[in-house]
Image (tube, rainbow, N blue to C red):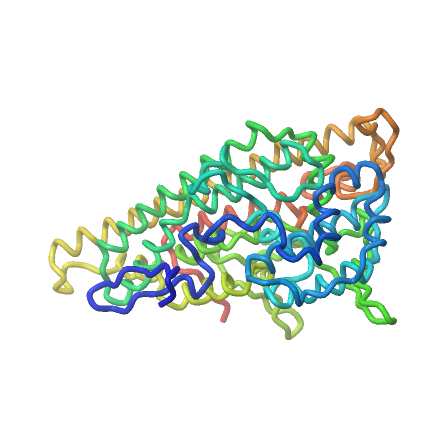
Length: 479
């Protein structure tokens, strides 16, 4: 076992699980220590120089010119895994600054970014785009040892240099750290499922519920330092990917130019909290099944979410299309992705709960076990309600920070797909991006998320599927 291993306590002689093998630290999916604030080799100074003044270069309209002057750097001088992670975050921020940092999006990514970004992405098992890992997991510094204290955090990279952007990104980092302890407890409970240790699993579910409530309380602090107008107009456009972004100006996605006539068009999802391994871990533990793809046709499916649940892949024309939640696992660091797969295979708490609902003392377990089974069911239902409530709060955040600003912008500028607003110097800006395209939509259901989903219907569907899990009814399968 490595000196930094985070083992799950052994239960009645069963072997422990070394969570560090899955990139899980004492801070959950955040790094064990503060991310590096600079790459150690001066060879990477050209990258450091740009990211250190990214907001100013974007504001002045010089970002694309400066990126065009970069040399094509090798990744051979990166000296540790944290340095690979910093390089990935730097290249992700520069990539999105290049794409969205002008009056119109730029659909060609130059070799100066493409070549090293593809190499770093391959190493970390991530796509070459601004993911949740780049924007949140590896984009902070903490003044102390407790990464859950948001007041002690600051961002390393920023598009706007605003307090609103830092607060928005750091809320998610603090949420990850807040949940660190529950990963070990619940993973141990998953190990106890086969032995039907009802009391132990119920205790773990109680702790999970409290953890989800604590994480939700952090989410509710978004309003303290994040201004909705600043977020909607200045921050959110840079988080967008290149998938389902036709209205924002990228009908073909982005061409990743590798030089010498090589390259490829890619349509990738932008960063979103849907890529958080923590939230998906909650779903795995509670057996919440998501089938939505985030597309326009999910609205009809959402209306019947409470009637039945289905698997996370849908058969279409003889092929299987992964749900959004399954697809975005490819946007998580490889070790985290494997942890979710491992957790799902350890044991099903939901199946244990469903089985306990039909069990009785006639089986010879005794009254104590009957009480434990009842407490298990109550703890499970409470945990699913807490996760459903968390998703309700997320929808409320979306309403305040995206839906309402989009309506206000539409009322001020009509339904033009090009945003016409003054910049901080009072000059007129006509920009085409996610903010302008969202402001031209007439219905809430038409709004597109940074991850390329139909935002409001998708979030409501995820919430309803979470509620469905708590009904303790087995899903009806197609025959």
